[in-house]
Image (cartoon, helix red, strand yellow):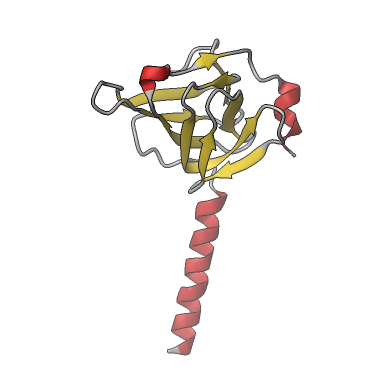
Length: 154
């Protein structure tokens, strides 16, 4: 009996290690169309899930970033909330150090503050984004995050 429990425990630990080491993401929502080069570097696939309207006044969507893909610098008049649903990536608020983000993290991007987010170089990232108070505006896009800025993540 003790031997059986030990074997099952080892198998469960090995399974957990395999799941966290995989580079393949589990897609929750359809991948959607590839984002344009004037908003993203690399292969990023944004998909709207909840359109803003006068009742909810909130925009919700999903972005699937392939390894190395990232948004350009941008800001939101009322801020943004990111919920990381799979993978590993980076988030940076202008003037601060890059943060590593991973499955289960929730990130709050302050109103009118430039930031960027995207996948790590080796593992993709999938995130939900929530933009509140869309009557104040949705997003202001800026320049691309340079390879030099992106490579400082270590």
